Length: 214
Image (cartoon, rainbow, N blue to C red; front, side, top):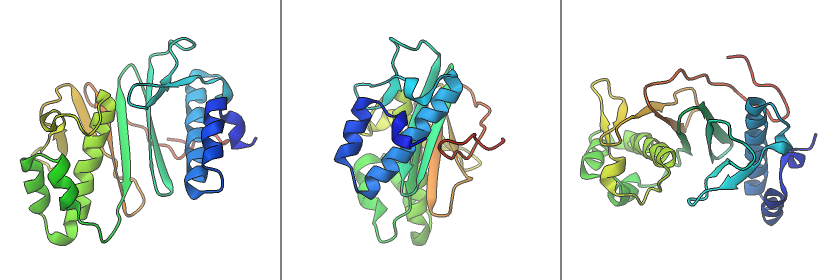
């Protein structure tokens, strides 16, 4: 089945605007995979999944047609997409590809708290881009889970390092962050889940094919 057959009319119009570009190809694959994954959870066909955009442009299940207690989030960068699905809890996910030659501290000074900037500067210069992306993806995942943008007050999305070096929300009580380690070299990703740490199952998904075994 062609991937575009999974999409609704609004998605097809957006795809038409991206026609012939790499962005369009990646968007089609990630959106079709999202619909296949949600369809598997809801036990319907991918084309039957009804989505709507919230006030921040994030796709969600349409409550008019689906009352399942299911939250999901999609993020993609380069050739990689991450899709998180959770039952009974809000979830956010983010993935970013390391791009050599960029100065991460310029962005950190705009969006990070002073303590977070110090944490990035504390590592060796060659490790600072990766350390920046650890914080960035965790903050972005948390922002998406909370339904906020990165322009939210700095303190609301501020992160702290636990004794073992893992990142945790400094002020967003009731949220758990998990860095996703099983990613290709050069990619960084984080998952934010509302509530206590949840069991996380990671699967590779090829559109139009069943997911791999856990």
